[in-house]
Length: 285
Ligand code: AMP
Ligand code: MN
Ligand code: MN
Ligand code: MN
Image (cartoon, rainbow, N blue to C red; front, side):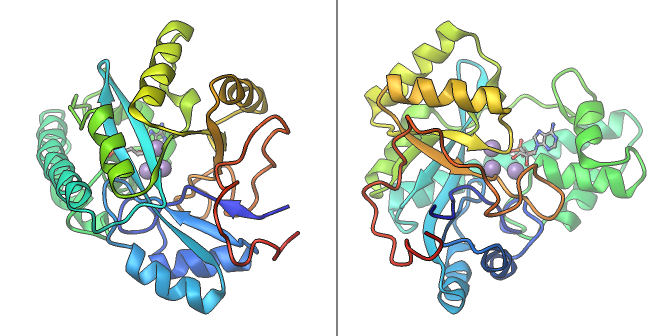
């Protein structure tokens, strides 16, 4: 079976490993094809390509775009994008600017509940000064002893109803899919079970997404239980969407699946890479 992983993060967003170290780690796990999909930034791709060549891995240009749809945050992964496509470049830049404002608002909220200096603290955790996210706040709060790990700090401080939560409007689904498609890539709904939306809204999302030209959905991801994997495999085939698989790797111990250790897609799925040319596709077959 092809060892392919189409969702991963580096220090350019909220991953722990630099793009080079991520590729080296992928090689150590016999990954034949990897997509680097940093949140709202493609700045890691150049370094990742260099290292991919050293490691004889096929690197797929990717990104994970933050979207607001019906008052909810969704993540749309772009695969096979051109990172120089101007609407994508400008759109991502705007999202990152919004992130900066949100980070200041999060810090102000935490300040009110007696946690000081979190903007500077979170910034110091970020590998890329252009992109700051909740994970950086989480790592700062853990380092200060406010919680034992990143998972529990989210629950205690960073989700709806908690002191460090700030609601935020990201880009629209329409724009995210347009930027991805316009750059020659394929749009994929990331970790669909994470959104906890009812069946009707989920149907609506999938119909809208397909109408906009989205082509894929993650079926295998660290956030899915085996039952959810089966459920989304069926949904993907019913909606004629390609199925994707990605660990959503953020670093050692930070995601359920390690790079390249994903279960196979269920048999009814049509893999999103079906029509791709992957030079080392036979590496692990
Ligand atoms: P942001 O885009 O800045 O709102 O941050 C979202 C990121 O935070 C996700 O990509 C995950 O890496 C991380 N995250 C979100 N929820 C949780 C959680 N409950 N536990 C651990 N990490 C989380
Ligand atoms: Mn993340
Ligand atoms: Mn995500
Ligand atoms: Mn992700």
